[in-house]
Amino acid sequence: MEFTNEKEIMNKSKLALELYLPVFWATNNSLNDMYDYALEVGEGDMKRANVMFEIFAPDKQKEDFLDNVDKNEYSSLILSSILSAVGQLREYPRYGMDYYTILNDLYISADHLSGESIAEKLNISRTTFYKRKKEALRLFSVCLFGYKIPELKGYLW
Image (cartoon, rainbow, N blue to C red):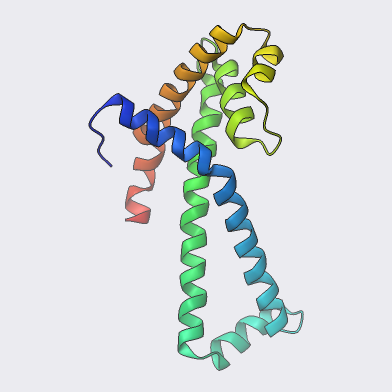
Protein backbone atom coordinates (compact mmCIF):
# COMPACT_ATOMS: atom_id res chain seq x y z
CA MET A 1 0.00 0.00 0.00
CA GLU A 2 1.65 3.23 -1.10
CA PHE A 3 0.72 6.74 -0.10
CA THR A 4 1.87 9.96 -1.64
CA ASN A 5 1.73 12.25 1.37
CA GLU A 6 1.07 12.49 5.08
CA LYS A 7 -2.41 13.95 4.59
CA GLU A 8 -3.45 10.92 2.53
CA ILE A 9 -2.08 8.56 5.19
CA MET A 10 -3.93 10.44 7.92
CA ASN A 11 -7.19 10.33 5.93
CA LYS A 12 -6.85 6.57 5.33
CA SER A 13 -6.08 6.02 9.01
CA LYS A 14 -9.07 8.05 10.15
CA LEU A 15 -11.28 6.18 7.68
CA ALA A 16 -10.02 2.82 9.01
CA LEU A 17 -10.92 3.92 12.54
CA GLU A 18 -14.34 5.26 11.50
CA LEU A 19 -15.16 1.96 9.77
CA TYR A 20 -13.97 -0.21 12.66
CA LEU A 21 -17.28 -0.54 14.55
CA PRO A 22 -19.60 -0.91 11.52
CA VAL A 23 -17.32 -3.59 10.02
CA PHE A 24 -16.94 -5.26 13.42
CA TRP A 25 -20.72 -5.56 13.84
CA ALA A 26 -21.30 -6.64 10.23
CA THR A 27 -18.64 -9.36 10.58
CA ASN A 28 -20.04 -10.44 13.94
CA ASN A 29 -23.58 -10.67 12.51
CA SER A 30 -22.35 -12.60 9.48
CA LEU A 31 -20.51 -15.10 11.69
CA ASN A 32 -23.60 -15.51 13.87
CA ASP A 33 -25.74 -16.13 10.77
CA MET A 34 -23.26 -18.73 9.51
CA TYR A 35 -23.24 -20.43 12.91
CA ASP A 36 -27.06 -20.46 13.08
CA TYR A 37 -27.22 -21.90 9.56
CA ALA A 38 -24.73 -24.64 10.47
CA LEU A 39 -26.70 -25.52 13.60
CA GLU A 40 -29.91 -25.65 11.56
CA VAL A 41 -28.37 -27.94 8.94
CA GLY A 42 -26.88 -30.20 11.61
CA GLU A 43 -29.98 -30.14 13.80
CA GLY A 44 -28.00 -28.68 16.71
CA ASP A 45 -24.83 -30.75 16.18
CA MET A 46 -21.89 -28.93 14.56
CA LYS A 47 -20.08 -32.17 13.61
CA ARG A 48 -23.21 -33.43 11.90
CA ALA A 49 -23.64 -30.06 10.18
CA ASN A 50 -20.13 -30.34 8.75
CA VAL A 51 -20.78 -33.85 7.41
CA MET A 52 -24.20 -32.92 6.00
CA PHE A 53 -22.83 -29.82 4.36
CA GLU A 54 -19.83 -31.63 2.87
CA ILE A 55 -21.87 -34.52 1.46
CA PHE A 56 -25.22 -33.03 0.52
CA ALA A 57 -24.80 -29.31 -0.12
CA PRO A 58 -24.76 -28.25 -3.78
CA ASP A 59 -21.39 -27.00 -5.05
CA LYS A 60 -22.64 -23.41 -5.42
CA GLN A 61 -23.86 -23.39 -1.82
CA LYS A 62 -20.50 -24.75 -0.59
CA GLU A 63 -18.67 -22.18 -2.67
CA ASP A 64 -20.78 -19.32 -1.28
CA PHE A 65 -20.34 -20.54 2.28
CA LEU A 66 -16.56 -20.86 1.92
CA ASP A 67 -16.43 -17.43 0.27
CA ASN A 68 -18.22 -15.99 3.32
CA VAL A 69 -15.73 -17.74 5.59
CA ASP A 70 -12.83 -16.17 3.65
CA LYS A 71 -14.40 -12.69 3.74
CA ASN A 72 -15.03 -12.93 7.48
CA GLU A 73 -11.50 -14.15 8.12
CA TYR A 74 -10.07 -11.27 6.06
CA SER A 75 -12.25 -8.74 7.89
CA SER A 76 -11.30 -10.21 11.26
CA LEU A 77 -7.59 -9.93 10.48
CA ILE A 78 -7.93 -6.29 9.43
CA LEU A 79 -10.04 -5.49 12.51
CA SER A 80 -7.47 -7.21 14.71
CA SER A 81 -4.68 -5.16 13.10
CA ILE A 82 -6.55 -1.91 13.75
CA LEU A 83 -7.24 -2.87 17.36
CA SER A 84 -3.62 -3.93 17.86
CA ALA A 85 -2.31 -0.67 16.38
CA VAL A 86 -4.53 1.37 18.71
CA GLY A 87 -3.44 -0.79 21.66
CA GLN A 88 0.19 -0.31 20.75
CA LEU A 89 -0.18 3.44 21.40
CA ARG A 90 -0.32 2.69 25.15
CA GLU A 91 3.36 1.78 24.97
CA TYR A 92 4.38 5.15 23.56
CA PRO A 93 6.57 6.82 26.21
CA ARG A 94 5.02 10.30 26.21
CA TYR A 95 1.21 10.62 26.36
CA GLY A 96 0.79 7.03 25.17
CA MET A 97 -2.20 6.36 27.42
CA ASP A 98 -3.76 9.65 26.32
CA TYR A 99 -3.34 8.68 22.66
CA TYR A 100 -4.85 5.28 23.32
CA THR A 101 -7.77 6.73 25.29
CA ILE A 102 -8.53 9.32 22.62
CA LEU A 103 -8.66 6.87 19.71
CA ASN A 104 -10.29 4.08 21.70
CA ASP A 105 -13.04 6.29 23.12
CA LEU A 106 -13.68 8.08 19.81
CA TYR A 107 -13.62 5.11 17.43
CA ILE A 108 -13.24 1.66 18.99
CA SER A 109 -15.43 1.62 22.07
CA ALA A 110 -19.14 0.98 21.57
CA ASP A 111 -19.72 3.76 24.13
CA HIS A 112 -18.46 6.64 21.99
CA LEU A 113 -17.46 9.74 23.89
CA SER A 114 -17.32 13.24 22.47
CA GLY A 115 -14.01 15.06 22.20
CA GLU A 116 -15.11 17.34 25.01
CA SER A 117 -15.90 14.35 27.27
CA ILE A 118 -12.54 12.75 26.52
CA ALA A 119 -10.72 16.03 27.23
CA GLU A 120 -12.54 16.21 30.56
CA LYS A 121 -11.75 12.55 31.30
CA LEU A 122 -8.05 13.18 30.60
CA ASN A 123 -8.13 16.52 32.42
CA ILE A 124 -6.74 18.42 29.44
CA SER A 125 -7.93 21.49 27.53
CA ARG A 126 -9.83 21.15 24.26
CA THR A 127 -6.86 22.62 22.40
CA THR A 128 -4.54 20.03 23.94
CA PHE A 129 -7.10 17.32 23.13
CA TYR A 130 -7.09 18.23 19.42
CA LYS A 131 -3.29 18.37 19.33
CA ARG A 132 -3.04 14.95 20.98
CA LYS A 133 -5.74 13.55 18.72
CA LYS A 134 -3.70 14.60 15.68
CA GLU A 135 -0.54 13.11 17.22
CA ALA A 136 -2.44 9.92 18.06
CA LEU A 137 -3.68 9.60 14.47
CA ARG A 138 -0.15 10.12 13.16
CA LEU A 139 1.28 7.44 15.47
CA PHE A 140 -1.63 5.10 14.72
CA SER A 141 -0.86 5.52 11.00
CA VAL A 142 2.73 4.46 11.58
CA CYS A 143 1.65 1.45 13.65
CA LEU A 144 -1.04 0.33 11.21
CA PHE A 145 0.56 0.97 7.83
CA GLY A 146 4.18 0.65 8.91
CA TYR A 147 3.91 -2.54 10.97
CA LYS A 148 0.52 -4.24 11.24
CA ILE A 149 -0.67 -4.30 7.61
CA PRO A 150 2.75 -5.33 6.23
CA GLU A 151 2.70 -8.28 8.67
CA LEU A 152 -0.45 -9.51 6.91
CA LYS A 153 0.98 -9.07 3.43
CA GLY A 154 2.12 -12.67 2.94
CA TYR A 155 -1.06 -14.01 4.47
CA LEU A 156 -3.70 -11.97 2.67
CA TRP A 157 -2.20 -11.28 -0.75
